[in-house]
Length: 496
Ligand code: NAP
Image 1 (cartoon, rainbow, N blue to C red):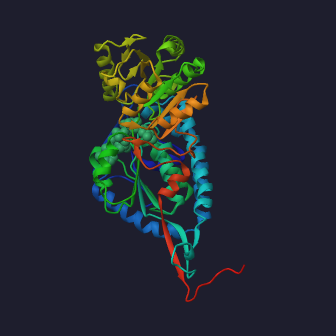
Image 2: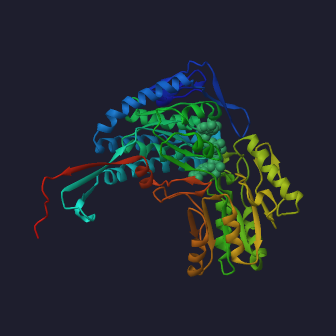
Image 3: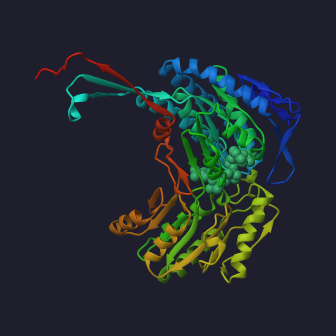
């Protein structure tokens, strides 16, 4: 498991180090957390199980570093971020190799994730110099009863320490989508990467180290979320939490203190297909949207709601396309690769068996070998089946046949989730009416749900989240408005 070249510093023996106060360190716990390769189920990597004491040290260093970092000119902060982005892109191969081994992401998609992340960092640096370089100037005489005796100047100030906790499915991209806005805004950043995905994230952090960020401005502690998660999220030093993941986020929201929270949680993205839809476009989008990275995407199509009169044709077209997907190891760039853990595979199987028992129509034979599950379309799904409501996070997609579009909207809105949804129709007027009726953070018209491009606003309603992401929204969320009011002894009006 030896690391070469620029990454030699981040490993000791066979265990990756954690990053604190600008240095790579071995935990005093003497314990490690194994990362199981989803494809061969062997231990692929080991990371440090950091202690509470080490978390305290990280917070102390992050706190003192932040004071100086906030005094660093904005253009210099942007320059360092651009440097980190370039280094990240230059090292896309070793980082992508880690993604292949620890989360079974197909090799090509893994490389794309790293490049997209570099672009996101650069975009954030550029956006930051504009968004943070502007404030407001208000005058008092617009409010009844006031003369023009007060000038109010507002600017955006950092919050302090931002704690970032991303999920396994985009451990690099969903880390930098929190790191870059936090840093450009003058915060320091503590990352707790997902266990599956931690080693890719540690490599990414090293790119920030190589770029020359001052010590303590960025840190990374590793360990199981179930063991150090509560200590981190309830730590008094933390001034903001940006979390992406599942229901864990709901629990964190209840425990965290009085600090801003950005939560991007699960989804059950509905795809409503009207009678006039282009079924070639709809079926390609369903296959791409539902089965890319084996369905392990928050914005995957997770339930198809199709008008009965066109359902047979749509299902036939989707099945033809599913038959062409390749299934196998991520190293071979297969479309469908093993899901992340054995427990995920067992959970997916539970949903599939429940649908079978309750009489759904299986369009393919259900096939599983270890963590590898073959793509499966389940037709004639009824509301009493778990798969109609729960998020499989795997290559399994339910189809619910509807007789009226209102049934589709009702199904979408009856979900606890409200991340994204999509509509296929050639009638833009109908599409707008349906979009407005859907209780989701985003609706895509004639395309599958998607998080990108990364500067678009991205938000979930209900159990899908708090706040909004996307480059500008994240920068704003990680700052607070500060006002300075100049009080004049006599009213002053600009000469006409
Ligand atoms: P998860 O189990 O909720 O884990 C997410 C992160 O939380 C991981 O880093 C995990 O660390 C950490 N964690 C676990 N317990 C914790 C605790 N008590 N306190 C603090 N942190 C804790 O989610 P996942 O399985 O990685 O990802 C799948 C879920 O994420 C799906 O529901 C998916 O829809 C959602 N997701 C949402 C979006 C979005 O933007 N809306 C994007 C992608 C994924 P460990 O790995 O060490 O347990």
